[in-house]
Length: 281
Length: 209
Image (cartoon, rainbow over all chains, first blue to last red; front, side):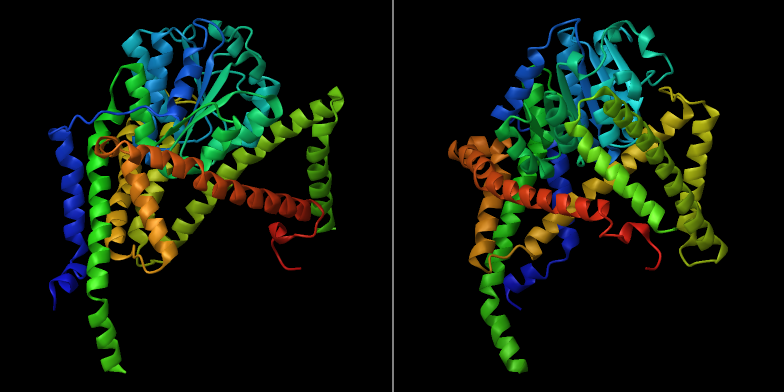
């Protein structure tokens, strides 16, 4: 059996082991690769940067589940830090049932860092079932969908929500989603109400949203951990996004090497496989 | 009547929800807002339906002593345990409550780990299955390699042309293809919605014809 054939028949557990090493080592020996900011991320950053302090809130829809939290939670933390460092009020909600605990965790962590006051600087509205109904309903009246916050306090008793009736009083919505919630916000918030929407999605999904960026239906887009890393660079507070970039660089290079090796081995053994097939006939 | 009433309801509700976009009168908009509220109630009951269905399936597996009933037992213990904890602590889950502790320390790491396993399988698939057998496959592989490099910092370091090429791939051919797909999907959605509202498509009713 030639070397190339042995390579093709390699036990895939060796590949798994190599991947594990490639992921783990950069965390202990950082490469310090610089993260270059791209236009979609910069656009979203500037949209948040334009928001007025202590005024109408940013609505952050943490519509992600634990499975996509490694990519999307760094985005959530970076956006919350951006808002709280500029005293921009934030109202957080979620359309995913498992997003409740994740949103609560993220906002609790950042609020503690900036000593933000609940009800004055930020509010957690909680979870609502459905997609089209709550998004459309927020355009009519926020209290139709969230009559009280996640802890049972009526919105009318929350200082920062005074005078905030519907999308007319929300300058920007950012959705962080690992499923189709991001485009639902475009369909049901942007299209009927003209609400400005930004999105953070997983890297796999990011390519689906370039049409919305091109038409201006999304003001900006964060794609995967790279998007989170770019936003962290802009906010000047590096977190898990930047930390993960070294590992991701090594992994992507490794996968490209595997693709090349696999194809070289395939073509080098093609003749022998053809001969073997003819011999069987 | 068993089939006519649901079809009639579907027709009336579907037609109303489509037409109300074009009628700004407050009575129509009020009716629309009320329907949205009903929809949310229905969705909440869908969660209940899913939960009951899950309990039934796994209960029957345990009762019938199916070979993998151990997993069903774990599923039911987890499900009923979390439901019980959630109800015990009232309607507002606070950080640090037992429900939250189990969610943050069990469900979140488990789900994140399951999704992260994809990285290993993708690497193995890349080696074993991604073959440049045809022109199209070769183009796909080359584009994939360029985008993979362009979306990580090492691509910026290797050559400044890599991120630029990645940007072009995402904003031109990718965008064009996605837009075409979305238009097709949108037309398909409109057609399917029309068929459902008009009662031509009745698979949603279940049962026999």
